[in-house]
Length: 387
Image (cartoon, rainbow, N blue to C red):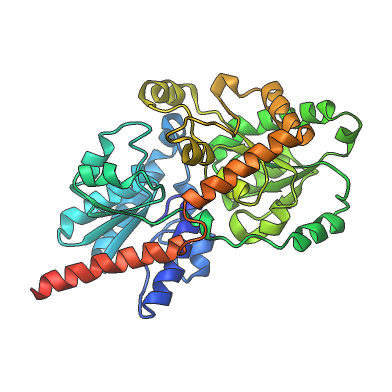
């Protein structure tokens, strides 16, 4: 069960890996386009669940609660071998609690450990009564989960297993769209409507300011915009002249054609870094969500490259701008350095390569490791029952 586009991609990769390891496996649950391509008929529309923040959730609370009842009842009726919830803890763990209450022997697995090292450390303890096992994306997360009473495997980040696109495909894309010799910026203001509403206008002004900072070349600045299924019309209205790309791994060569990127803070930052494209990350939450977050946060970065390379050293190679610091001029200044200073570009690209190795690049595919971890949990249950 996934609750947003990034979880949908995680779920699709896990479904493929489980099917490779156990061809008889069957699936029922919630997902989006990627999981549908793997054969899932989603119980509810993923777009209804892809919301974040207090002020964003409240207007859609009735719909979310209705889906909570629908999904929970379907899971109980299916009586599956395992319930796998993928990220989106506000929704997915409520489903798990309801289902576990009716099926107390059901094996429950949560994919993507909650960021207890960043904020609300008590979440792990509250998860433990309803979650048996956690699949962690980051190597420093398992101790936090096991200390709370769950088992946990570091499986690696899914971005680490994606093949790098052929540079010739990126060059062909630039040629086909007349981008040779032009500065190319990828812009991604988010996959949720609330995110696009808050970040989109700021990003649009930042692009205009960047064009001015690039001098004569700025007149030829071209935009690439990956668009999630949940916000197609919103993003198109903001950037009508941009070249639109599908989200996720469907357009890796096209995204790799960018010289730099301006991104909503989140999974897409690591996806873009993995392509060798340096980026600037930003985020604006509602004032209430931000006020609460400021009191709870225990770290000064939300960027996975910065986390992976700076967990111990404190290095922050990727510029990040949040809330009041997220202004068009600040974003344009940081982007201009990526376009105009080769040393700044190279330093971030080197940090990205290091981060990807930390997160699993060069080893077994994270989706295969996740599938093996799931099947090992089920095998343990079978052996326990036999005993």
